[in-house]
Image (cartoon, rainbow, N blue to C red; front, side, top):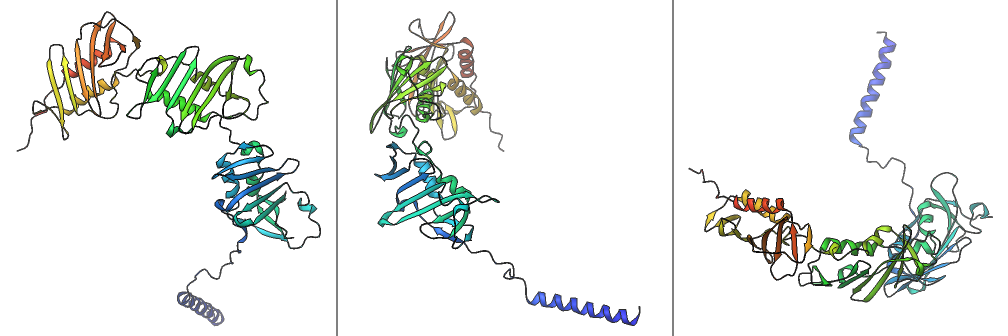
Length: 433
């Protein structure tokens, strides 16, 4: 290598070595990177501080929201119940309200920003008398931003367009669209009336729904709860034109619900394939989902419990079995072991029998025809359920103790259950040495 090139290489190597040494002595802490732009906080209005909100959209009347007894209500342009979650979404955009940047400090003309006649202006009146004003103008040409001004300040800011989305709300956006406002957790009575019959439900001592009318039948809790869910979800369709001629439509059914605050009613009618409702809670007649019309137009049997046993997922702790040819046997749960006369029984065979009992479901309800019981089974869980089974010409019939109902069952389901009961066997002998 030539002497001159050797000298240059030595200098470069020395520089690199010096750089490595300096880097080790002065590690990068990140403070030499570009500084993060400071947050421009324009307002921070917690929802609890807000007492009134006035929203004015260009070309539309002002919508006024007021806090009344802890809840928000629409007071202008007409009084309506407010959707509490929708109002919360409006105020959430202001807690905090940050700007992306300052566009201009003292603009000579705000027309180019659309702030001479804002798209939407919000006045937020807080506790203590303070009022904040936010004016939203045009969209910024590039990016998801909008122009805005705060209060009487001349500055023009660029804000995230999500703020505009939150504040650009009309009456229909903020109305509570529920047709019924009952408290599901405090509901005590549900009454249904239709051409298929009248049904009334009440809560029993266990908190389950019990049919009261036309007779004290066991109710199918799932069906009742599903009806209640659909009634709670029923909403006005404000995108549809006002409904006319409701009284002339074909009646589909009616519902009366009672909770701690009182009674609410809903009348449902049909016009061709469409369903409409009139509620005691809100003025007007509204189109509703067709499945709600179907839900209030069911027969008594649609709401009756077809399960023969109620223990459901609460496994029994005692089963008394009287089967043909097997005598009377009582299986009792001791800890995790099933025992018969002190002897451990095979857990799998007992569980198979329990599963068959749990699955027994009536094909229909009948009023007569029960003869001599062929089998009697008593299941003890959170409650005691005694059921007798009688053989009939077309299957089996079941009768629960102290109940007027007779249940018709198909042959296979009952005989599978009876065979499972006969197949319960002792546990295998221990192989411990």
